[in-house]
Length: 276
Ligand code: SF4
Image 1: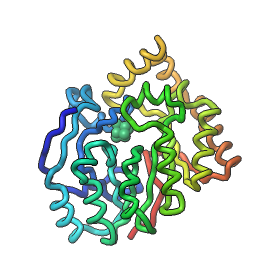
Image 2: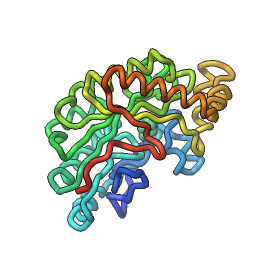
Image 3: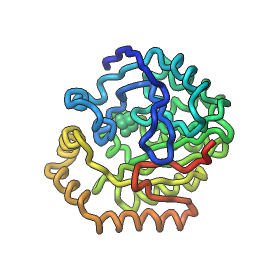
Image 4: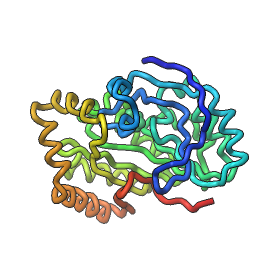
């Protein structure tokens, strides 16, 4: 793993996600290296190919954040939107924790999305109405998860995060990206929805979106599972009727388990929070 230090000019960048006002990304790059990660689409080809093997640490991000918090209009801050804020490098640098300390009580709403149990370390900070916490689960099948999200914490560890935060802050489960043949089966769908129900979490779901550079990472991962799987998955990705069926299955399961759910389209989104 290559860890390098860089300096940044801004800590709170305007977010293109419709329900966030700002993104706080203290790291560039993500150790978890998921083979479908949308963040690669904004990188150079060289960095995209190396996804999962590098992290840039923004060494001055806290001092920049302190300045920006004093002058920027209040709103919802996504922590973080281009990498997992609790990836292993956070254990050493604590830029997510320190960023939350700055934002907490400053009038900004903090919306955290992770898949790492390291977020439990910060339970002393993440509490009350100023926060919401989302956990990403693509599949509860560990074997499948290992193939497409090779260095992410195991699905059951993520489930534990939701359980632990349940009742302490608003929690949500992001079910996605849904990969045809691997995560779209009714058993997986119902298991994921049941978990959201158990934790009192809202559920957001989204289909696989094959953005720039993703085929370079996803094709080899899928071909290692089964020859020809990548092309079969791509056929499904383009099939609107297929998606209607998958979304119908999710919505029915949510009705059965009493889970509030919504598609994250038209853009990848988080629950709406009152603008501050
Ligand atoms: S954890 Fe999130 S940001 Fe990190 S590689 Fe996976 S999808 Fe991308």
